[in-house]
Amino acid sequence: MSSFNLAKKLQHAKKAWKSFTNTLQSKLQKLNISKAVRKTTKRIIALRPIRSVIPHKLRSRTHSERLRSRHHHRLRHYHNYHQHQKIGFAAIYVDQLFPEPTSMHAKHLHSLDEASNGKMAKAEATVGVKVIDKKALPKKSKAGETSAPTMADAWKAAVSALPQLPGVDERAEEFISKFRQDMNLQREQSFLEFQQMLARDDLILKTCLRSPTMAKEPVRVLVTGAAGQIGYALVPMIARGVMLGPDQPVILHMLDIAPAAEALNGVKMELVDAAFPLLKGVVATTDVVEACTGVSIAVMVGGFPRKEGMERKDVMTKNVSIYKSQASALEEHAAANCKVLVVANPANTNALILKEFAPSIPEKNISCLTRLDHNRALGQISERLNVQTPAGEKPVRELVADDEWLKGEFITTVQQRGAAIIKARKFSSALSAASAACDHIRDWVLGTPEGTWVSMGVYSDGSYSVPAGLIYSFPVTCQKGEWTIVQGLSIDEFSRKKLDATAAELSEEKALAYSCLS
Image 1 (cartoon, helix red, strand yellow):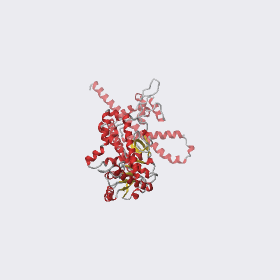
Image 2 (cartoon, helix red, strand yellow):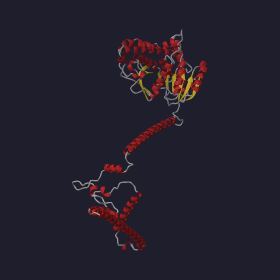
Image 3 (cartoon, one colour):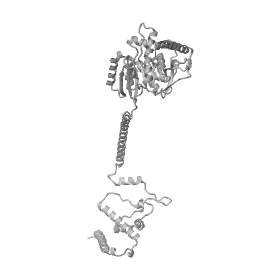
């Protein structure tokens, strides 16, 4: 055998012997460790009964030493438990989170860190604790302070260490987006539920306001000539709340002459059949005293119309007789502060007669209907300008700019509108007159809108040089049931002539009416 082959075989033998000795040494070390652990366990078990007997003050170790020992034992138990369970979380050491050691265990790790590499390996093999390398520790800044890792770095490290975490950012964004959508849907649903609750509460409130316990006391309203055309159009408006408002109950008193009693009863039946919520009662009679008893508002529609071939004085005599008897009944049986509106023509003079025979009714509570001509004028202007009636707030002259039309066709159309309706319909204007009567009483009782005025036939106090003692149409505003003449309006020469002509005509009618009384 050559020397080269012998050396080669000896080299393999040396390696085998070295491996054998290393393995044997490792097994002996493990055997010694297990023996030491068993001995220590037996010693602790044996000492437990003795510890319960020895007084607390006679124990050798201090309280802080015992706490450190327990803390160290818990850490080892936690490490061994997770090592056996094989949980795949990367190790995170306290030294990486705090610049300075905060426990005895951390100081022990730093002391091991300062040892040599051989001692480190020996400590790892003996104790079973992984020692942190300096290269793995956070680098120190110039000031000598250790910079703690940020949350972003810790999150990246956790994501890279766990295979189930990649893609968690996308899933988190998806979850947050879905959560926001759910919250928006819940908010919208809550808002809709809140609106529905408000609607229910509003309905309950309106129901309570309309309940008998909280409703207003009904107002008794007299309508004379109720079986006629105007009366037939007027009474349903009153029962519906057009005259006194949507929350004011009413009791209708309807008066007509004996020949119209059957027709009057038919009107009553229709009112009952209509089942108006605000209509609390209907009195249909031909007795003037019964009709006037307790009424707070009287709308005098009944009168004697001028027929073909009749003299003007004959018509006036008939109407004076009618209004004399009705005025006496109102004087004796109507409610205090009763308001009276005369509709039947000649309305201004009929109102004067009523004032003469009902002296207890204040003159400010007696008026006549001129609102129909007022509304007719508004209608003509709105048609001329092609706008809605309440839309204008400027003077008519600025908008129309046609004096010839204003002084001619406009006035003629308003004056002859009643005759034009009779010619077309074969009956007098009833619907527009009933609507004007409702407008008159509503503004009088409830008040005119701020910044506007209306036309009412009222007792003249001499304003605008109109003779006192006449029932004349004035521009008025109304508040709290009282009317006030609007003062300070400019009157041009053309308007002055018209006002004077109307005053002269009314003065002539007044003289004729008083002559009929004598």
